[in-house]
Length: 75
Image (cartoon, rainbow, N blue to C red; front, side, top):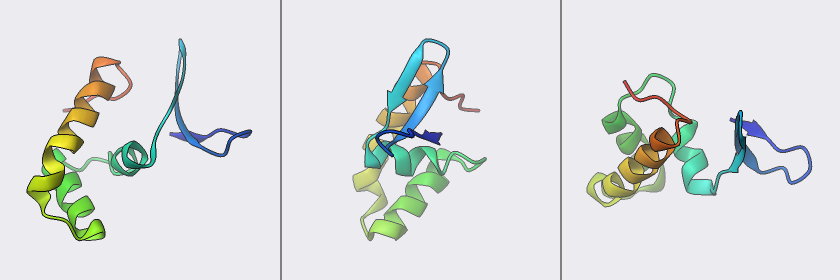
C-alpha cells in the first residue's frame, strides 16, 4: 500500500495499474501483516467499537475482492 503523491489517497499498485482504496479497504489492508482474517475483524471491531459479526461479511468481501484481483494473497 502506498500514498498517491497527487491525491494523498492510499493506493495499491499492480502491473496493470493503480487501485485507490476507500477508508474501509485501507483499514483492512494495513492489517494484512500476518494476522488471520478473524484477528483483522477483531481488531477493527475493537477500534470502531462494533460487534465483530457486523464487520465480518464486509471484511471477508473486501479481502475476497482483492484476492480475486490478485492484489493480495491469503494464506
